[in-house]
Image (cartoon, protein in one colour):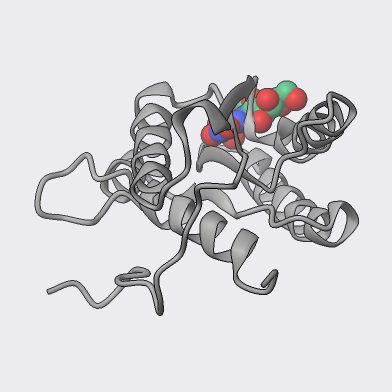
Amino acid sequence: MAVKGLGELDQSYDGSNLRIGILHARWNKEIIQALVEGAKKRLLELGVKPENIIIETVPGSFELPFGSKLFHDKYKKLGKPLDAIIPIGVLIKGSTMHFEYICDSVTHQIMKLNFELNIPIIFGVLTCLTDEQAQARAGLIEGKMHNHGEDWGAAAVEMATKFYN
Ligand SMILES: Nc1c(NC[C@H](O)[C@H](O)[C@H](O)CO)[nH]c(=O)[nH]c1=O
Ligand SMILES: CC(=O)[C@@H](O)COP(=O)(O)O
């Protein structure tokens, strides 16, 4: 049995009153698609209604933090505020320092957004050294690792409900 991962939740959570935004980058499409599906599957299992899972995209992971803020502001203005956002991106090391700079800045800015927007902004970004690491973490290599998108869906529901009642 795998040691790593979120595993079972600590209690049951009801996501039926939540509106959750998924904002995904379009880089590394095959892996992204699997992660988005994993997050969606878990949100539905935890009671989030299909019509309350709103999916939008941005070009790459660098756009995720500002995109999340615009996503949040748009739905607030529409009178349909999001209870949590799951930004999803897949960064894979290339041959320059591009990867390191984006990993660092995006991670810090996503953390800051939690406090600035006052809703959970989940860390749905894989920071991988190889294509294989990314595929494994999206559940695309049989018998290797679980789909991390599922953990992100569960984290969104837990963090959007846990301290509110
Ligand atoms: N190399 C990866 C990128 N790079 C693109 C940037 O995120 C950004 O879209 C561009 O620089 C324009 O601002 N994005 C990923 O999501 N994953 C990568 O591996
Ligand atoms: C700026 C880029 O998108 C690209 O040239 C970065 O290259 P690498 O991914 O090999 O570091």
